[in-house]
Amino acid sequence: MSKAVENFPDDPSNTTGGKITKFDYEKELYRLQLELIKLSEWVKFNKLKVVVVFEGRDAAGKGGVIKRITQHLNPRWVRVVALPVPTEREKTQWYFQRYCNYLPAAGEIVLFDRSWYNRAGVERVMNFCSNEEYQEFLRTCPEFERMLIRSGIILVKYWFSISDDEQEKRFHSRLKEPHKRWKLSPMDLESRTRWEEYSKAKDRMFAHTDTKQSPWYVVNADTKKHARLNCIHHFLTLIPYEDLTPEPIELPKRTEPKGYVRPPMEYQTFIPEIYGS
Image (cartoon, rainbow, N blue to C red):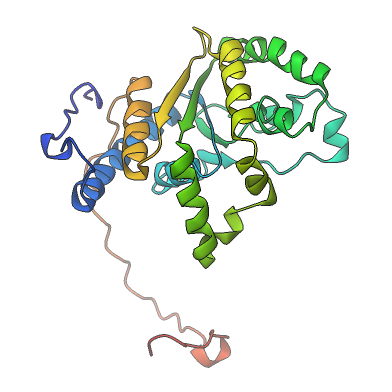
């Protein structure tokens, strides 16, 4: 078995010095997604536990990166967690409790599309938590993450950084594109008026939680394609893994029929063939 990342040189054709072409982007994404499959198999084989946290501004492209990471991975072993607003019961729990329910077992990778850092961001800015709850989060979050790491979890935290102008462009794009309008929530609209408050909250969050044991990795997300490739490439370098790709498989021949007669097809209910014939 050979090391996958260390012997995995960058393709010079992909470092254009400017905006990557669609061809080079798709070529590089394909290459990196193959490596993600190898990484996932290595995590499963060695019973590792991986948590990846994705945070950042609204419309910064977190979902797009998560989609490309999981596109070809086995959902039995790689899960995305995007929790809704906490229920009344969950609001009375220890703050981190509901997130613990989704932590990985051996061999699993869990991607949090927003996480316990909601308290340091939207909850703080929108006054959804008290000042005491906020201060307690800043005190205990590093301790919570150290507990996760001591338990054997590999914790990776990404912050997607986007400029004010680029966020504005993406908000307008969502308004125009019917398939994306669901992404523009009332909370997103409110965030436009509180850019500075979110900046202050992010800076204070980093001051308390950007630790040596669990650092924040900042992704420049103004160009979506670059952000996706850079984030996936960086993630692949964080966990040493080996290529467990099996040898080519030869399909066995089908057994000869032994007189079984299938029921008539008209006994089955087929959906209408609107497309094709």
